[in-house]
Length: 423
Ligand code: KG4
Ligand code: ZN
Image (tube, rainbow, N blue to C red; front, side, top):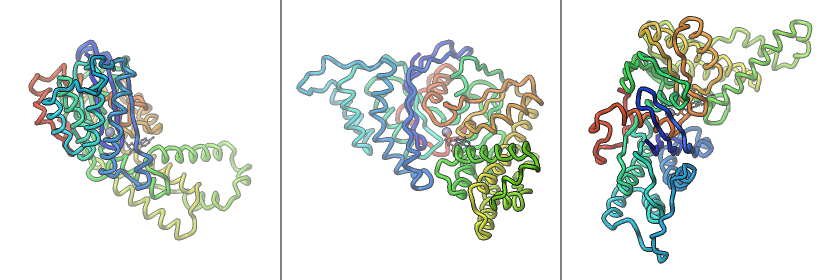
């Protein structure tokens, strides 16, 4: 089965073509193309994602990305029967239907129809598209484009929950097998969730953030530290700088501390020697999270340091390091609790924040030490942040596990659902 998957829930336009075999018991994936056009730089100017800007960019990026994805997958064949005079191969009735669907995306309609008129129907079996959660204006672009393709090519369209994509992204790696029951820790820019999984696509949320998502906290703290959006990778980089500094200090000892006589370093040691940020809700007894207090603690700290004129790169790195340590500690603590509670055989970790090296390291250490029989599946860094390969995988599982009416609803029923909950 070959699936063309489309993801436009946030600030990445992504299209993948993925070939599957083995059914749900032994899913085997072969990625034929995996394309992501990131708008992060554009949104960085505004300090975060602007939904209407994201929508505009998705509309602009979609068709060129589609052509490239199909070309790389060797599935795009020119339609030789198309008259050179510019006659159309799409019937007027079909064109009409597509135009109605892309009513609010007229530029996208014009671009897409050009491609549809000059190329043959690609040899794919289904189209999968993210229907939520995410930014609705952004989601609609992918959904409407997917509907247009489903009509033009007469292929089934499978709506996919973005968070299910983050869970099953681990199946892209052939070595990864999920033994049930499983638990997933999902950490992204919009979500922080612990999910109990009884079987493929049978989810129950057993813990979640009561305010900010952890990725959002990374992004907000980054802004307080004058770092660009998206903040996660930036914080991670700064925290590493600070770690190196600490290790050097520990190794060189008292004798060479004289070499660190800059004012900044003294201030760092004097003022931040006992720098300790809160670990919110760590002992709450449930599996929920809270990250807004952590961000507020950083806000007050930065204000104070700025007022005292103690604001420099080394101090920023020290704060980034402590913030990351606090966030990772809470995530890991609650995840271990979830493993204990559910007696899970597999722990899956997905979402953009899995790209964080510290989180990967601490989780691996603790899970190996405390739950040696649990199979830990960390999403590959390249598949952790938003992409369409993960949507193809979740779409395939949907095709192989759900009943026909549930996996392929009528097109009119497929809608953008900003707050779609994982079930
Ligand atoms: O899953 P994702 O790509 O998009 C959403 O569905 O939200 O996650 C994006 C989030 C952003 O908040 C970004 O700052 C965070 O993932 N992120 C990281 C790292 N790389 C990306 N957070 C911490 N450390 C990283 N290395
Ligand atoms: Zn995501």
